[in-house]
Length: 633
Image (cartoon, rainbow, N blue to C red; front, side):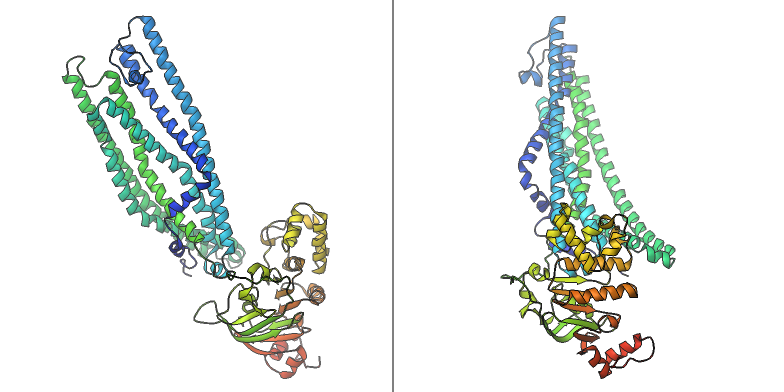
């Protein structure tokens, strides 16, 4: 099996515009929160710059008693001139302490405000994006689900969207940190010494350009890693879901080998990217170290060679430079990590917004038909359909079913029975011909109006994790809402549907009756019980057209007889299509249609088809306990 089959790399082509611009578009409704958070973040960063300035002023004005004005003096926060006398120096020191305390207070308050506003906004964006992506995914057509793997969908809804939230939560704040810290420090250093400031800031453009090249280089590698993660997730999801099959056939070693191979591929790609990342960051550290040494030499030589009091820098300012250098290059080195995170986020954004850009192939027409009710007449007019262009599954089928009729469909496996009936609720569109309900092409209906009157019970019905009552109530939106609200009338309708499907008795025997949790996919119920719950769910909506796709295939003979009796009562006023593996299920149908290799082979009543001695008679004879069955039986 190709591991690329069903992947999501192709959806990247559906992205409209730049994916990261689209991501920030989700922040628009929260612009006021973001603006307040950004302003608070800048205040936090600027407040962090004050304590080193206070230390420099303390060294120069209190310890060394220099009369040279500093930045705080120029700003009007400290007095000018020399500080003489113990009392004056204590008062000066106390003022410095107040300035530092206020700076720390501002920093603490604004840090809380900025982090709360920015992080909570990131969570809101994550929620909105996941909701929109999930809703869009659910509205895509069935062919999309047939061609894409569940593991890949889960990876987008969880891993990719979580990565985008993490990017907004951390890297956006890092961007503010870089701008505010580098800008603030650059201004302070330049005010004190333009020459040393230029030396200190020299690596900034180099780091920016290097980060840009790093982004370009690393991008394809992270795309490859994302593909590998998606394939690995799909393999793990398939194996966990298929655990019973693996156990039954003792394929532990085989599956371990497949998982190990993909895990090793992921390991090799991740380690390769990690090696380059570490080398890039090591280079940045080396560059900042060179600048540190350069400033130490230039400023130190100035102190050594200048006469007392004539050095370009005061002692406190010299200390200030080195305090700031540490803070300057810490966010600059973080630029490389942010570039790395940005690339990961961009790769995820491409998949998320590529999925959002995926258009459903089955949509409402411009002026959809919305009837008040449907009678249930169904016509297939020379219908041809195939999942792939090269081989149709159904070919040239013409069939007219009056409202209220029960039609049984028979034929060998792969004859196209289920596929033909999937065209009625318009899960797929015909390649040629037309399917009409009440004389109107299904392509002219509003999808929901059409599907509201069609119920399907499949051979392997899907039940949701929850209670029996919740699964039955799923068949009708009003009942489901009432069930959630504890409405007794809704609960009674659930019981009525269960009785009609011959499910009430076994449900009452469950530990908590209708409130019994049935587990994932209804695993706590037997196959027959799951099908009866599914039948009850389908009947709750009171559909005009009902499709039973081998709905009694997993039940014992006694249960099948009870369900069959119930079905006969239920379909009296409905159009019913019954696909049956056991032909006894459909022998009383108004008409039986036999498909063979996608074509209509024969049709008629049970008696007529046995008398004709064709495909149906052969199938009937093959299922008979003893010898051929005559048309008189």
